[in-house]
Length: 251
Ligand SMILES: Nc1ncnc2c1ncn2[C@@H]1O[C@H](COP(=O)(O)OP(=O)(O)OP(=O)(O)O)[C@@H](O)[C@H]1O
Ligand SMILES: [Mg+2]
Image 1: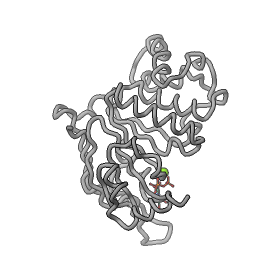
Image 2: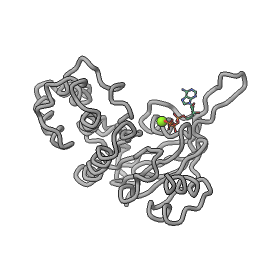
Image 3: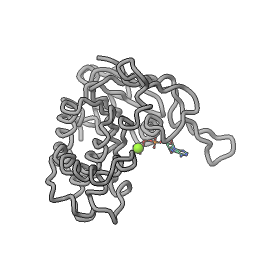
């Protein structure tokens, strides 16, 4: 395994509403993401997961620390616009223009990258096929698609630029359990077929067994525990992870 991204001692602090107060959204996080792995980030609401995702895709700048992209030890991959990391959000409606057809939504990143409309449209059908959706959806608007279909469309849009890293931030939270399982299965197969890494953010520890290669448990902006998913689930080291596992067993 080779390293794709090094996150070293990264913090993101915000000024609070009370004078002098500091919100430590991300507080000294260090880890490495490897090529072609699914890395789960688990934590309760407010633990800093989305802030970490925004730092990785460059929507936020760290207060301190460094993020270093390594692409097979060649040029930093951020310099290649076609492989920018892609972020898929919990609520697809917030990231999709309701007045655009699916054809235009899935090809938007390609068009922004300078791809001519005709060429982008020609690839749209194949992009939907990658997420196991029928090309019939291309002419529809978002409100004519189900929640699960919209998340697949959001994934297809992310895949359009062949990212080295796809970040899925709570993308199954609004879906029923069987649709959630189908999306996880899809991500697993895309990891293989696209050869990309996936940072899978969730607060649901019970979904990552048999799915994520490694997991980091976050609380209050910091990583409490990190390791192979099977070992963390079988032999959790931090009291917080034990508490999370117990909550799942009794739910
Ligand atoms: N722009 C901001 N300004 C001030 N505080 C912020 C900002 N963004 C996030 N925070 C705070 O940083 C902390 C971490 O937020 P974040 O959204 O990263 O958590 P999360 O783990 O994604 O939570 P959730 O599971 O609810 O999505 C929270 O206390 C949040 O209120
Ligand atoms: Mg979040």
